[in-house]
Image (cartoon, rainbow over all chains, first blue to last red; front, side, top):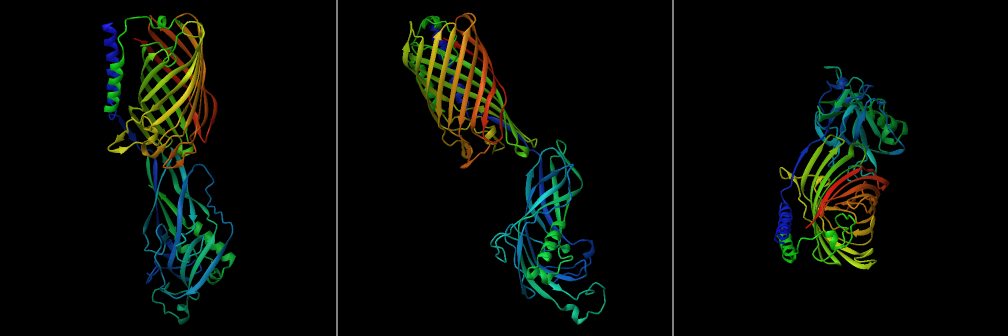
Length: 265
Length: 293
């Protein structure tokens, strides 16, 4: 009987000890694959020699028309990485929309709200877009979604995809493109606009120069998305765009979607 | 923790001194009964050790994660009289969480301790009863460790347990007629908020076990365990890949060694999967022993 009681007592004490061990848990962790995204603004090759602007950015369209861009707001998010192989032609899904434009004078630039990218900032400005986890595999591109600007953004239009403040020089075929060339009076004639583009948010696929392989050997990647904003007005009739012309709007949205370049490291 | 030790000390103080005796003789029934299904008699004191291995996968794509769990539970049951048995279950849990992104987390520690009582409200049949039925109730205590690494809490899914108080109540019925034994039980668990703003969904558990004794020392078992639970919530937001109904079929063997030691081994596999969202339960394996002092 004494032996049985001893066993019972010992058992209960062991259980008590086991319970008392609470607080002594242990653990470890190992991070997974993650891609960090950032965005930067830059002119394309054809505008590398464009003169600096007093404010914002000065560049020339493919037709040689000068644009002084005082604001160019975009809000975008990373949808995900596109696994290889896949059809990586840039696509946009533009549904329907309308335009709101009005004329303004030079020097009316405003600050971008938080979370909104202003491509008129100095070239090379870096905007952090966050991180996304990823599965092992080879990726050939990234999918972006252009989001409606916040309602407190300039223009104040619900669902605006972008807000632009361009000054357009319709007669600027040679203006400042030929060093030392005399400037003709007509060439400095310009009009400035504030334009909110209200349309459905397009999804854009941007290809990498070469496949990005992620796995045990490479768990972290940095993906930089460059916006060549100086291509946005190529082939766009800016006065018509401001007046709400559908063709000009579609051309602008197509240009924006095609202006992204992605690099990986 | 001091409270628990005090409770255990109190239990220890009320365990009466008994002479050596055959536990099955005391209840006049040769049925092999696993922990929690034994017939009560005054002073019956049973200790069990159970090891349970399971795995589940939830989520999809980049959010898919697999949890491997090994749970070792030390149990003590003490019968105050033929109608009331108190039990204490102390789990030690080891979990490994593997993500589709190759991220891994591992944690081990004390789980949530269960205290329960089992009442016999109906007894009929010869001697100590052929048909027994009653109620059971208890509470799961928020005793589990919150495991950290370098001061940072690991994911709630890899923590040993939810760290939540969970009162529970249920009913049971058992049929004892050697070589047959059947046990049917159902319980309802309601969970309070646990660690990391995690709120486990309330659950109904039902279990049916049928056993046939090939000999007085060896029995084969088959059963069905059902669980239906609400969705879990994180900071008030429901987890789409949680909750639902799961049925696990069970086959096993129980072996009596000597007069008092019981060994059991069992295999469970999903037979009904109506879980919410993306969830998949893998087959589970159980091995255990119980000893009557």
